[in-house]
Image (cartoon, rainbow, N blue to C red; front, side, top):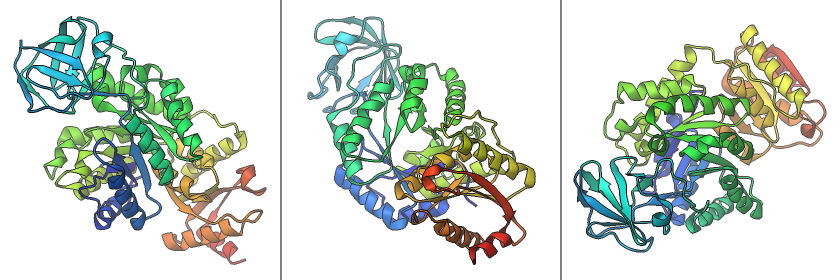
Length: 472
């Protein structure tokens, strides 16, 4: 059985055959992630084609690089020891040589004060800025190691004036719109303006793609409420976040962001190194198992695999392991959350809560609901009920976007204006496909006044009664 907590798997162009994607889908993958830091447009297009060949219900998420700083290419990696003095130079088009590390942000010397800490490669190498001139930051190395090309730079507690979007990001966002993808995960979101910058490009392309704001710096945490108000969903990207913010604070930040997202009906993803050891090992560590389980206990909508499926030795096993951990949590606890009403459509909000509470008290086995926009489905998912939500969706984009939401199993049905025949037939097909017993109780959330009017009733009865109604 698939888990209610959704699984995102990163797919690289090096291993993206339809057979491989099918194997991950069979194990429980719901959304494919494309990491634009490592692929071209042609690479991404091939992954998209192969994913669509497997199933049109799989969501596709494209991950932009965002406003980040990285080391430039080099002739050879720089081996450093504690106490060494090296130079940092803002020169995006230069190559690092000798003791000079060139980085992708031109104004780094201007923006970084003496005394600041610089962390390279998610904190693998720590530097302290001891002096600077017009060209270089002179930095003392705090620990032994190797500085490689194209590695991340973090400057905790220092705000640099990077643009929200690079030229590469803009190109990939337009590409995503042209390819009818489902989500843009924008990296290093600092405030609502970063989300709005992406939305403007999508609006210019008349694209229905939804924006997932990646929270991975201190500014993003500080501005989380305004970011949530402008984004479709949130990804808690803990790699860079744990470099910018003291590590011990991350678990509580994760819990608070998830809680806020659920209350505001925003899908929320927990990401970064969840089963990292499975890149090379067939078994995860106990700490990793606990990490995945805690994300599920926190009620995240989705959990994500990166290198485990993009370049790991055991990609199918990693998805299966993640699914089994999530299922173990889900079957051993009731996850109902009594979240406050928030929708402008108070009738839909009230009926959604009533449907979930009824499912708990009457021991029903499924909630079936139709939707054009997905809002009523998001309302149902927010309560984290025990029943799967079988969403009958009249829009293919919305169907795939709901593949990211907790407990939702979406299907596309043709829209029949002013008629309930399409919904009735889809319910009949669903009941037959899922092989519900005749005495199984099912809940229907739907409307009597047309799709645009939203939900207006809930109906509770046995599968047999619904099947008989389908034949009318």
